[in-house]
Length: 349
Image (cartoon, rainbow, N blue to C red):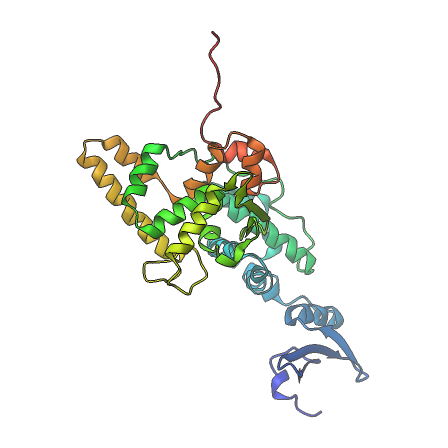
């Protein structure tokens, strides 16, 4: 028998790899199984699926590394996570690190609902634990689709930790204190976040070419939801339209198409905004303490940039309009999570 080619020596017996360089410059790779008659049976383009099919054809046990969570996590990180939104990819990477520390060496068929519940109870970060269990559940469902297990998803029926929505509300005094200490780019970001009701990452991603006629076009990074926010009213420019006109006038000397720019014309990243926000908040709190208001200083330090979105939702009287601005498909989410001040009511008499 002729010795196997070098590129096939990492594969199981009778399994072969074929590669072709396509005209577009990409390399095409596929795997085959050569039976006793010399006939080649296609195994597909994915190395893990090919090894599974090889095991079936050879009537052997599935490769152990594909049945241990480490290998399944590796494949999920390679094939599934990159297809998600950028923020979700970042969150999943952090969640996967926590899951790997416990489940990496566990065979997939050995994981039981009680093990999942023990993981939930051992995590001190209860809200994060819920997100991690949601990811683990999805990993199991995908593994079932890949044919790596036939057992039921052990995450099903496992209770999640109770979550209490954040209820901080930035009142006008806190807003004015922070706004008064903020550099221009932070003020612009605060105003833009308030008037659009969008998440911090979406605010920093807004550009001049997102303005189309009477609308500011928004595509939310987390959900992919598309919105059109009015720039004009029946009597003229809306508050948002006026704000964007002012921002573009201030940015006229810079070439960047983004709205939120530093003094030198550089697009403000989320890390840059966090640094500026922390410094601004600290300065505002120090001023409040100097004036003898320790309670206000405490409230200022609790103010996070992400609290601007619920502030906007809370200060729109019509819940349906608030829900539409935030991009929610259900008003219940807006009411339960983002409305942080009570409804206005008249006294009995």
